[in-house]
Image 1 (tube, one colour):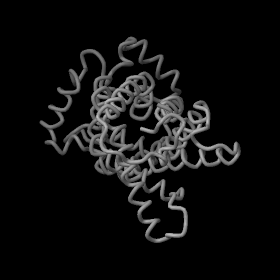
Image 2 (cartoon, one colour):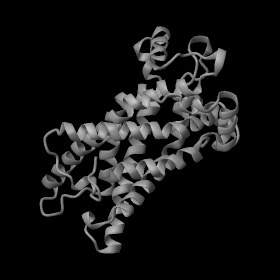
Image 3 (cartoon, helix red, strand yellow):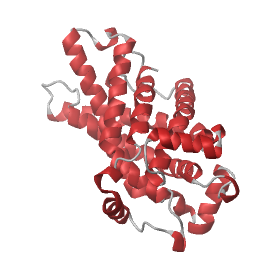
Length: 294
């Protein structure tokens, strides 16, 4: 993870520091728990409930109680920290590959990455991360979307994973993986490119080196990058949530990503592809800001 007040592109790639990785895991897990309170509202809006985020939150509170907002907490605790470490570790590796390419192709120029190369490195990091994020988010979404009370389908994440594999085999854990790959590549490409672009603009405006920028300015750049991520990748997230909360066998509604997109467009139009955007944006600013400043 980037050092405080310093661009991720300015960090070298030292040997694995297990203490730093542990820090990334802890910070990521804490961030995952903090996200759950808002994330369940986003998932319900994407898969079940019509109306505003506030009305959805009120329904969850009235029908299921305050504990319902913590559904799926264990999954982020176990998976999100690892995802954060993988994202940044993979990003550094792909950044170095692109810097080496720049050195070889343009030896007389600055080896720094262009915004399109930042997008490519971030997207490649997202693809790497999707190996874990796909099944982790699948379990989280099923736990958050399941009925309450007597209609409850899963006792917890392990029970959820066991039942999915019983119905669809191990591959069932990766349902919606194609749209997950698209969302991770595009979303994290935008995330890293937006962060680096905003820092570059800020550095030019203030005539300061990156390490001289105050933490609050770095946090704002990170927060705005998070907003850009969700604004530009939310339709993919909606389709992913619909597919990962869908039934199995005769109860399956969406056959493919394209089918899910067609049905969503037919029934709800463009608005249907942005259901739950409000909670996503509300969550993105503090979580993304904290990630880059940590």
